[in-house]
Structure formats: C-alpha cells, structure tokens
Length: 237
Image (cartoon, rainbow, N blue to C red; front, side, top):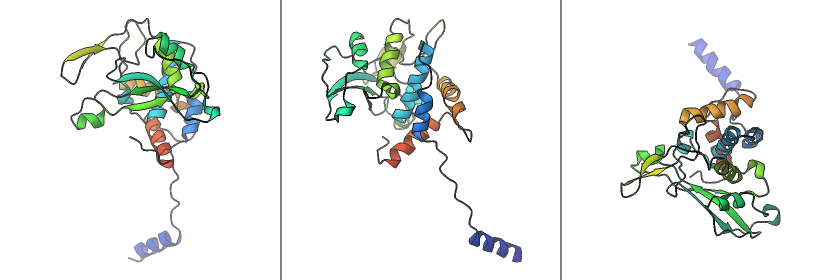
C-alpha cells in the first residue's frame, strides 16, 4: 500500500511530459516530394502520386479507384478572384487541351484549371453501399508548378497517352458495365492498374526513407494532410 501511495504521489508531483505531435509537417513532406526526379514515366508517376496523396487526404486504396473516364475524372477551368501573385499562364492547360480534356480553353489571367476526381468503391462509400465517393477538386497552382498536382497530372497523362493500358470493367449508375483505363498504371510489358501495395512501396521508397527521426508507415501522407487541414479549419471531406 505504501509503495502504491508513493508512486501516486510521485506521479502527481512529477507528471510525465506529454508526447509531442509526431506527425511531420506537410511542408517537410512536400520538400521531399518535389525532390523526386521526374525525368521518365516512372519518376513522374511517383512524384505525381506523392503530391496527389498530400493534397487530397486520400487513402492509397482510394487512388487505385480513379480511372480516365468522366465517371471518376473530369477537367475544367473557372474564374477565381485570386491575388495577382497567384495568377499567371497555365502550364497544364496546353497539355490538357491537346489531350482533349478542355478543348474550349482560352487563356485568361484569372482562370484556373481544375481537376475533379472521385474514387470508385472507396472504403467509406463501400460501407454505405455507394459505388463512388464524393468529388474532390484540385486547383492548378501556376505560381508553384513544382508542388502542383494538376500540372504533374497533365504531364503524366501526356507521357502515358500512347500506352496500351488495360481497361477495367466498371458499373455505371444503371448497373451496366463500361470499360475505363486506370489513371496510374504499372510499368512493364503490360500496363495494369496500380495496386495499393505498390503505392505504399512508392511512398516508402520515395518519401518515408528521407524523413528523419522515428519510423513511419506509408499512411503518414494521409495523417499529415488531415493534420494540416484540421489546423487551418479546412473540412477534410
């Protein structure tokens, strides 16, 4: 009894130091992501995936459910009342125009290109019996192309345009099937949709190994993105 009392008294007099937040800063992860080379298709794919995960708060399994089809992927442009430093010529628009995504695009200084994505059978939607998640919008950042996922997506779509990518059957809202090509694909003799484990390996190899301190799992991109949004009062969904 006396030992237990002494332990409680010591804990009260000398409380343990609370553990600090161990989630790395999103800026630190972005600094790592933009140092991923982008000289070939594999490197460009890996950098695009890293930026995409950090800016969308997506699970790795979510982005395996994005296809080059208007059911999960669409591109457009809209006027924004942005400050002058955030405006400028779009680097993504010429590539996306040549690919046929925004054939009506005409450059205006206050127009920004956006990419909308939603995931086929994400975990939350599947639990609710839905086929697709909510749309998530990414806006081009003409002032910072190195960190812009829209610009890198445009480059990746251009680089993979001529590939013979295996199409996957997907159901539409009328339960009829259509075939769609995955957004991110493997590199080899055949180009299949990426698996969640492959994306995890990309994040582990390209990002995590360069984080100093404690060890992390590939899901740190989602935790980092969520932490950043919560800190600034941005809704996660």
